[in-house]
Length: 169
Image (cartoon, rainbow, N blue to C red):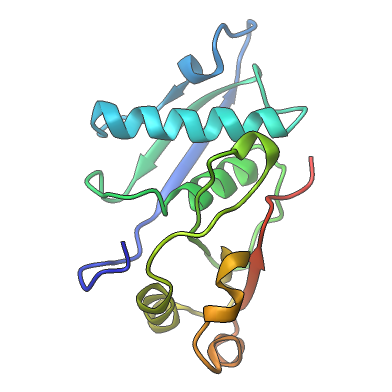
């Protein structure tokens, strides 16, 4: 949300090969501890992003865990999709953490869209960033980033990229 009570929250994605072909992709994704609405949002984001990846669908049983099960908004989606791609070996691992915010109305095309709260989210990220962290932000934020934001992250040993698409399939 970008509000005063915002905090960084981890997401963990574990994948296991399916022995048999799956029915619906969303049926292979579980997110214990989340309410039904949030579980559906997680399933839809991952299923959509896997449609973008020719080796993503119908191959994995997936478990998703969040540090904090009660959150609102959709700014978690980019972090979730990147964690899933990393778990499936489709994204390079960072030396530290991957800190990401962004959403999409069309993950199946790989598109990353803006979320609200650029200023407060950047301040939070800057205060929490550490050596080896990879920061991923929506390309739409490029002109809104605080002055010296990139330089301050670099001085902490973190890297930042503003992206409009997730990795190529």
